Image 1: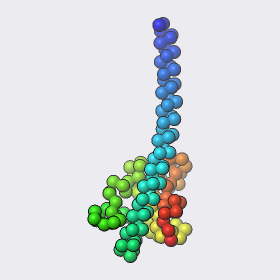
Image 2 (image 1 turned 120 degrees about the vertical axis):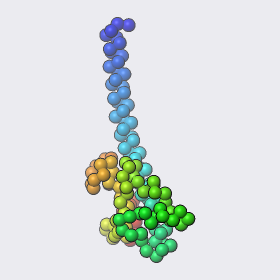
Image 3 (image 1 turned 45 degrees about the horizontal axis):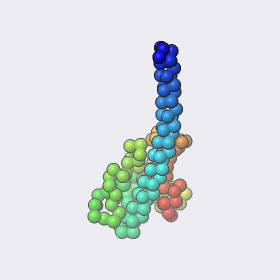
Image 4 (image 1 turned 90 degrees about the vertical axis):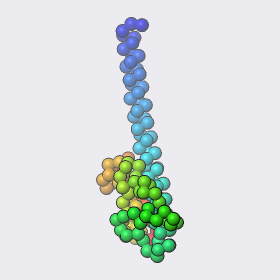
Length: 131
């Protein structure tokens, strides 16, 4: 093999690596959003169990009540209160548009709003936080 042939192979492998990386990172972002939706739906269900048992919602701003009683039906592991991007999920009482509460992840950027991976994932949009 000549030096030019070796360089051509290296360039082709480099381009292939870039294409695969871009393709994989797009799918990874979508997978994290789906995980966040599932996680938020489960937490919203646990909040509803808490409300049935305690006859009130957990205090606004904190979901620690869900992870403080391991034997309770509404118990959820503290690690599940962190979104796929490593940020704490937010819990808002009352929620928007007449919902009793909202559990929200601000996506990959950790800021309200955004698009794509940075878009918010909210229980109010999933239909899990009922008025």
